[in-house]
Image 1 (cartoon, rainbow, N blue to C red):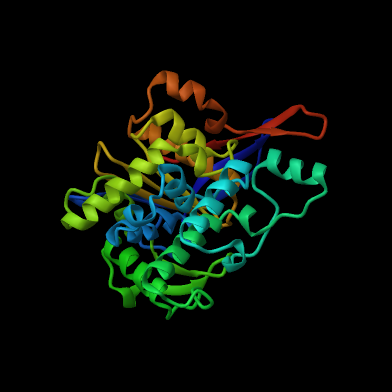
Image 2 (tube, rainbow, N blue to C red):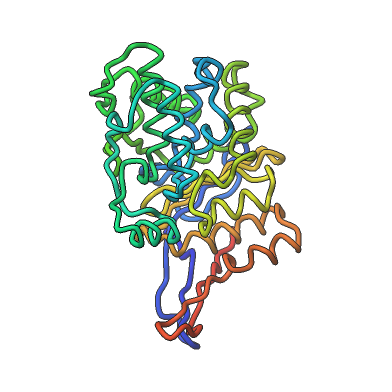
Length: 331
């Protein structure tokens, strides 16, 4: 375990965040690491783009006419904005189901604007506002296609979960039996695996040339939808959205709960995964920006437009800058 981020207040380093990083070249294997690249943790919501590959393997995109926005919201941890909720609802309408079938539960929207709007209207969040509702709608679409039970789709032994576990294992260069199964915040099975394998999966997702023809095509369709509709991935203030908008396809990135993060670099055939051990999400942006700078993915103008993520400011209750976070590791 190595230090990833220092937290400064004034001239004093007040806190720090530690973790592990794995960098994989899809054709060569592990190329760089910090800490333990085989550190085992849950991939959490970073698995979503991998799970959604199943839709294309089974031609659900053609059968139901899913748009890029609808596919992207299935891959995202969306902000609960109106456009996100409408897209999830559209998916459900296309497969002939209602929001009553969603078993993800509800929570306050990740988007500050969306949460404020609900408060103003004195409305409570629904299952559509759950950041995972798109993924759940995708799972229900597989149930609708094959006539599988929609009431038990969260069960690890349900056909839809078995299919998704097989896909994640294949992309991660693992056997299904290697996956450590837990339960995610939205109720679905979540996969524990080494960071190395998470990096491998995202390297393959971004650059699938070495995969079977069906998987390569499916991966290309997933990344195409994400690149075309980055506004469906997260709240607009989040790093996922800003990074995907700015890089225009040179970076495929996805955050997961408890501060896990996965990156694929299509033009370089590289996958990266890291975990902040204390689960502190505030440490993620400076680590991401440091890694992308290390691999020369962003030009000077892009770095400037994303500068708020390089050394995120600490603002006090009076609105004054009193400190900042800085990634100071070297791979």
